[in-house]
Length: 333
Image (cartoon, rainbow, N blue to C red; front, side):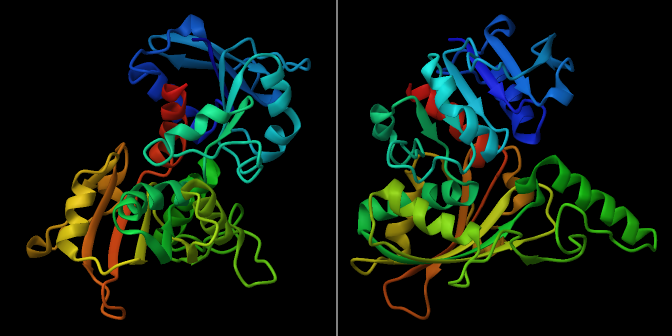
């Protein structure tokens, strides 16, 4: 299988390189001669280490032919909107990690642990969901299958890695400045991120919800095939380098006990229970960083609604929330 990474020099692109070299696609590492790296013209010619070799980053070809079988696209929505279908027309299955095509009816929106059969209907482009949606549904989908999810409220605690390498550098730089007695200077984010948190830095609509919150609702409905699913989200940016966390309160078609939910989650693909009240040990972004699984814990009855559940999760936004989910889609192909 010939593979391309579009956006190879970004944070997610670097994660793709690690996954393809060590994990591979369908259990087989991608050899250097089968991998092509694409990025913006200013990055063309850059040499990138890969599996003991060095690969040269190329500018995107004007004719749309990437010369590969699968292209992982993570270079931004405008690039995908402009070129994804052209890449597909030249024979590449495009697994797109941007928001460009997620709600397009032609394009499957896939979390492999949740709706793997959706890839069968692809027309050349498959969409990777938003990171917060992926993490939430890895935990909620098995509960939905078992008990019938009817409503969820979600509060996210989103790491700066969601804004790419620039977000990471801004948090680190501002933290150093504050500790040295200086003032944080926002650039990537609209507010200081060091020692602070704020509503997610995406456009707020007329309904009062920001874009990240609408993604969670609309993408979850599409992936689960539940256009009537009631879901409300509050998405917050926090001063964490990597891995998002989410607090979820969920209601179901019948009353669910904590023991029933724990049994379902313990058997669910992509989930690792971290739930030890006696030791006060529950999911944290630090423990989730670099991990394939979504860590789930703090399982308890929702005190405000009989039969409902409350839980807390943490998952690596760059890995499972982006690159790994895309590679798992390629596994299905």
